[in-house]
Length: 310
Figure: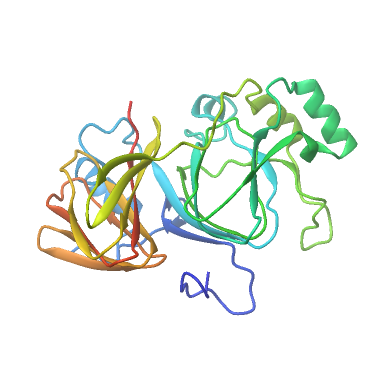
């Protein structure tokens, strides 16, 4: 967080996440520039849902997505998240948690765990593996390299493993069910809490793969390549990669955009307003703003996320 992304993380503390755009609970992003400076994302949403997320947004209860950088120096827990129907039925909130990961940086040989390594793993086999302490033997381990994008729908078992810096987009939910945590102890010296029975109910054992979408090139010119990285009902993620300094004019949409720089430096403009993004910085472009442009330096990557396709 400090050395690569330049975050003001406190010295002497292990800081594994930076929440970039969040309307969640008491962890709200605060507007940093302009007429609404000082308002939380939740307050901004209440002022004008249509102006922020668009008039055709399917969900106007609150800002629908949450954006993070995650620095995994060690293996994170093997876990699963519910879908919205499961979350509501069990009293875990109104939203499930489908997510996607984009690898910003990774050690040589780094991997993630994503889904099962066979298509016929059953609930009974998973439960037995958990009792025997070898659940990881059922997992599908996938190489993780800089620039890779992975899609993790609700119900898919997964884990970020050590040596990876991830950019994550997810539904605005904090419901996580842990199956296995590498026998790690909490600060009190006890094994961390697991949620095995609930998790086994939530796992989608008949998941369809692959979960690593192939990038689809939309535009390729002398200045940049524009690719679709992940397209789902919950969110759409794309990327501008600038081979040389240049400008990209974005189409007008009835919806918000969240942009983050994962390499280099860019200037993001909408109308007469501009902000500069360095590596690890993020900006939210409300729906009501048009004339959006990106001025990217050579070697710049900008991720763009919008609401999903219904």
